[in-house]
Image (tube, rainbow, N blue to C red; front, side, top):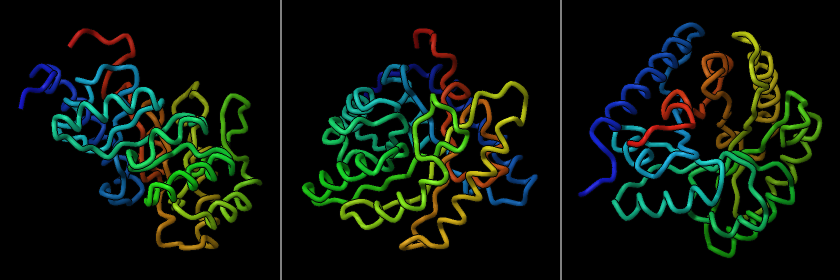
Length: 245
């Protein structure tokens, strides 16, 4: 099979991903967690498709995009190469773009309204599939962040859990940009508290098992607070002003 990436790019991405994994292991060790509980997701947004190819071939089985228009061509190209990562959509999803991603995602992290969940439900039922989703929680209260306020989540979960064609697997949150190490940890701790309270009353607690928290700047603190999925871009793929592969 003729891939698009260079051996140098493959080794660079493998090395960076291994470094992230080592830090996840260390964070888990500090709080007595099993590192196998944490899924590492590589966020290849803005980078060309060969970066996603190399990351997957190098052992990163979960990849994410912020935008539908980036996910679709990468998913198509990797499928042509018989490469099939678990694709995650982690950015804001507009209702008019739901139809394009049905059946192509392993998990949609960013469901920020009951109306969006309803559209995913309708499209999934029409396609005869079930789409796994997370409810986006705006725990920090930042106006620039999308998502449900903590006080809205219980009602939202009840409403969405009764929809056909979707399964609510848990919560996703984004913390504010840290101005000092560990500043994000209280946001993650609060999100975990909300998640655990919702899980008790979830329609099916056995599938309410996902807490998506942590990016390159703060994932070590998210893991300490129970994150099951970390979304890593810069620490694997590099700065967004990427060099030619």
